[in-house]
Length: 236
Image (cartoon, rainbow, N blue to C red; front, side):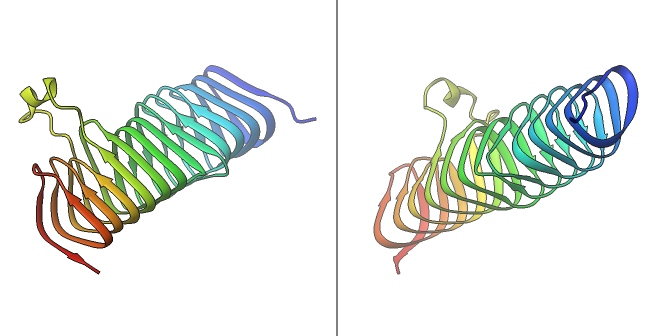
C-alpha cells in the first residue's frame, strides 16, 4: 500500500508515488509526484509534474510542472507553470495562473484567472475575471463579468456573456470597467453584453447593451440592443 507524505513548516522530500500528500507551510517536493490526494497549504511547491486524483492548492502554492488528474482546485494565489489536463472539474478562485493549456470537463472560475494559451471544456463558467491567451472553447459558456476579461477567440454552442447590473456601478464607470475583449466569437446561440469584438458569427445572435462589435454574421436571427454599437451586420 502506498504511504502518506506530510511536510509541516520548512522541509523537503523527493517525489514518487504516495496515497496522500500534504504540504503545510513551505514544504517542497523535488521531482515528479503521483498521489491520490494532494493538498498544498501556504507557499509549498512541487518541483516537477503532478498526477493526482483530487488536488488542491491554497495560499501561494506552486506546481512547477504540469498537472494531470481528475479534479483540481486552486485558491488564493496558486499557480501551475505548465498545462493542466483533467477528466472532471477545475475550480479556480482568488488570483490564479496556469502557464499552459487548461483542459477539463467542467471549469469554474471565481476571482481572477490567467491562462497562458488555450482553455477547453464541456462547460465553462466564470463569475469574475479571466485572461486567456488563446482560444476559449466549450460547448456551453456562461460568463458573468466583474471587471475586465480577455481572450484571443471564443467558440462554443451556447455562449452567454452577462455584464454587471446597472445602477450602483454606473457611478463608477470611469474607474470600474466591465468588459470582455475578444477578437472573434463563434457559436450557435449567442447572447452578449458588455463585449468588445471584431467579429461575432453565429446561428442566432443577440447583441445586448454595452457591446462594441465591428462585424456580425448570422445564419437565422439577429437582434441588437439600442445601447449597442454594431458597425456592420449581414446574413450568411
